[in-house]
Length: 199
Length: 127
Image (cartoon, rainbow over all chains, first blue to last red; front, side):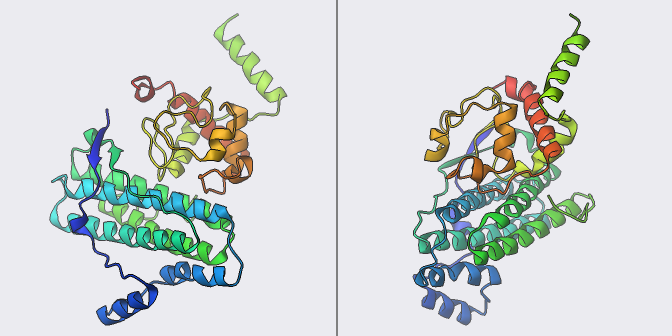
């Protein structure tokens, strides 16, 4: 039987939200961080709207599905981080990967708003099969399963975007998820890259 | 009629309708593509799959469906699942399943066979 857990603790948040694009750019510049190519592409949504080339509503739907999955992934990593099963180097990795998912979610939500949509919120509670997570390997295998699913989901999303910038951005996130999957598999002692192609 | 004879009739009928025979084992591997959003036993970004065959689309209690899926008026069976999985956004315009689809017919048959088999598994019977 699955258990329900609370949403992740906001105290683990790694991202800093700025109120507008200029402020965000300024913040990122001062902090020495570089806005990723994916974020640039996503934030370009405003330009698409300005040109009157409004993406179909399906783009917002696709982005919201991705956002929902990212928010769940954040919660899943929180479960792993708080399980007490992860040893220090692996725990750091999990928190780093969770941070990536937070960045994905942040950019996706902002883009949905720019496109005139309403981003989905994190659920108050998520259901995870925590009764099956008894060792570090169990947690890693569960995370790897979610990351593999995320790769497939983005792979299936890339071709359906009306806006090619969004497709490019989704492909960029896909690459990040694939790296997560490979590293988790490596940590488990599995072949990190088991095939030449993803599906 | 023996079980083997019944199976032969069922397989024969499927073949006559141009359906492919799915391999649940192969379908289980394909199901890994669904893990970002779906689980067998509980709702996630997408609805749970236990009990999918024979269920009316948009009817899982507690899951928030798109208006399009609620309006679809489909019952999930091998044929409707095959049609949906081939191109979800075309089959049900407005669905929130933003996924290009499983384009290979045999892969769809395998995936449906797995979902069908999993629906009879202990995981699903316990639900």
